[in-house]
Image (cartoon, rainbow, N blue to C red):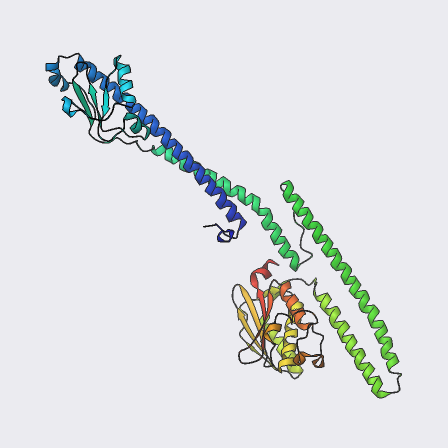
Length: 447
């Protein structure tokens, strides 16, 4: 099965840590396996040499004893964990003589001896290589007598010492801690850069990144700070251009108003005045929208319940009634004027196209949701995603006859994005539109 990166954790820190730790575990496992194999070989060789020494002593003693007295001599010889018996020719093992035991025994005795392993073992060599001793051997003495050395049990390689295991565990923990520290040091600049970029989206006056650390980190911070300075300069230049355009456009509109008053035809004069009012409204709305993309308003705690109550009182003065259900559990950290503007646009749209506005507040530790509902015709489902685009007007129910230029929802969405949230539109099952202003509390606190 092909391993997909989607199955890995999304955090770069966790991914790098897992990769390095898996590599470390494989290396430690390989090292442990090599040490175990080397230890098994050394222990087996030591056992084989010790056994060859004992075997040589017994063979040397028995060959120095008369054949009739060998049975009595066996009772006085030390055997350790082995049993030594004299056997007849028909009891000799049929396994071929091979392995290093015969060579070691011959070297110690100074002459060759025939040695055959017992059971299914292929010889002392195979057992020694795997850390085990064969069950026993049949040895032919000088003169033709056979002698059997049989083990009481299979001897395995002893376990690794506890101190060695403890040292390996301590080494693994130390290296793991160093790996985690190194990965954190490598990913921390990326985390800081992501936080700075997120903050920049909400506040162009955010402090610049500290240009410190390794060369790559300093270069990334310098590039980000240059980008922030350029964006800030462009936004300031745009603000000045908007102010100039606003002044330059209002001046000819004022002259046109004055000249329209000189027209004798009352019907034509009224039509010209209406067109000039529409032009002024479009210019004001456009400039207001462009200014709304950037704000220098300070972030502060806002009493959402008090804000909604004051907006309800303002609507009541104008003969509009809005209902409010639910309440915010705690103040929301954001920009007061911008949020008031977004909510006012949503309320105005609800009253304009749906004849009423019902506000519902849903709040928890992670997100504040303010829903503005109306009882109008709603919006076609395929157009819900487009109505927040600037100047987009979906159908005749929301035409220029109702006023506006199609920027109210765009401004509300931009303000939601400015606070790290979103504006979600959905048709109600019982009819009408529900506009939900989602404001995350975590992002607002970070701003």
